[in-house]
Length: 143
Image (tube, rainbow, N blue to C red; front, side):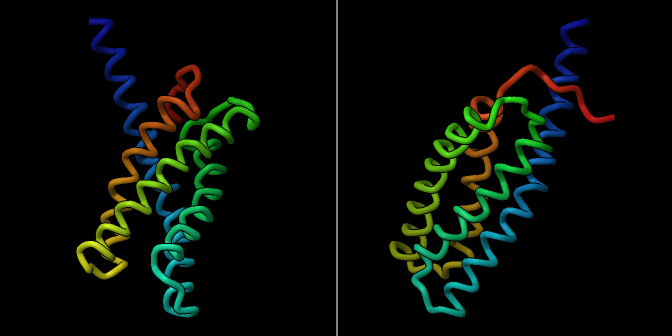
């Protein structure tokens, strides 16, 4: 019985973290997509470098808010930032690969391509940050 109770707590923590991660992701995506649209529509930059510029900018917002709100990590910045950068670098590569494939390979419009890519990279980032970047002792759910 006790093990089932602990699993319920773990499940509640995971659900809270994912909801918070998703909310932070919406803010980060706002920065990402704002730059993407501005660079492509306003400055006629190619969609692939424009989306990568947006990805990096959204990543800064993501690091600061996820460290504080989602994972409530006490890992020092000196450790967390390079881990975050490595995980985000892989996400950056995934973003490049999928947007390139969808836009250049399949000829899809860049915004739908970016939306699908965002969904794919979301699960990579959440899992890697939870299991490695910000991993620490369990944090109880916020009351």
